[in-house]
Amino acid sequence: MTLVLATLAVLSLALLLWQWLEATLFPLHRREPDTGFAPALTLLKPLKGADAETGTCLRSWLAQDYAGPVQFLFAVATENDPAVAVVRRLQAEFPKADAQLVVCPERLGLNSKVSKLAQLEPHVKHAFLVVSDADVRVPPDFLRQAVQPLRDPAVGLVNPFYQLATPATPAMHWEALATNADFWSSVLQARRFGPMHFALGAAMLVRREALAGIGGFKTLLNHLADDYELGKRVTAGGARVAISPTVVECREAARGWGAIWRHQLRWSRTIRHCQPAPYAASILSNPTLWPLLWLAGAQSSLALDGFGVCLAARLAMAAHCQWRLTRSWRQLPWLWLAPVKDLLGATLWALAFLGHTVEWRGERFRVRRGGELQRRV
Image (cartoon, rainbow, N blue to C red; front, side, top):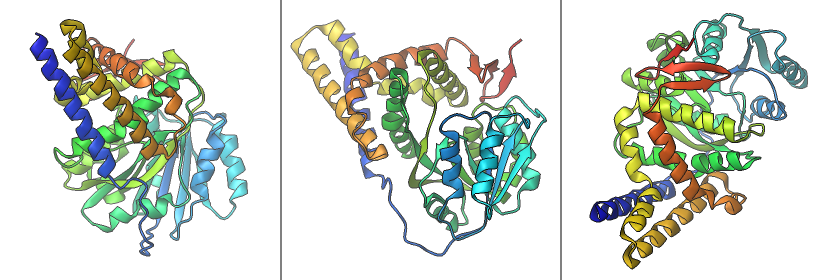
């Protein structure tokens, strides 16, 4: 058993170093020269509620430095939604913008976000769509940069990486480390096994014809991971998913451990149902769990040295990858959360196989194989 644990510790270290290398090689934040390619775009923004960051995030889209026409479609379920006042203020601030607020009262499926997107589809004017969450803030040149991969007709969908930019509580710092250090670098590592067959939902640019080819947003109405499913179906139709080197920010109000834990459990169970084999194998890449178990089992100087090497590599990787994504060292005081994240991640991994229920926006659902939702009574 000691030999098995030692082997798993070495394997986890090797996978960590490989992941770190992939993150280092990717040209994050690279800017393309102006090519003159600026097709007309339609931005779809499903909204629900508003917080202190909503106005800043939405304004960043309206203030884009982009040469082509942009249609802005903001969706709410009711006129009483707090987001309505935010949108009205921005319409007044940007009177020349082609910006429309659309009330989408129907609940067409279990995914309320996709329900709004499906009701926005008839209002779309242009051949390229941008789909983005309400809490996403983008740099001024985002659209100009993100459209560049679409010059290749084989590319059907483009998405950037995203950072969690406003961690205000210890729980949010834990989640920020998981996203800002581990998630984007693991996506690049997975890409070495073959082309991407999924999308990252913070901001996505998709050809309208590719969306029509899968039957439109209505085919995603009961999927929790609608971004994953959209990428999967677009690539099944023969198009490619590309990653833009630009980085966007997700800006959220303060949340505590309960909300963060429910979010992480929902994410884990969804990924497990969407990609059961890769998710099951992901436990092998835990760079804290296996060295710690080796140390506990062997209690030798070799195991202690091995644990020290793995821990040092883990902390260095987390610090560097966060810096590469955020271009800031502000997360350095929270670096101690890296091994904590790994051990809690092992717990989440186990819980993902021990249940099917998730909580999302105050409702409870059962996640079925493939990531489809079923309402729990």
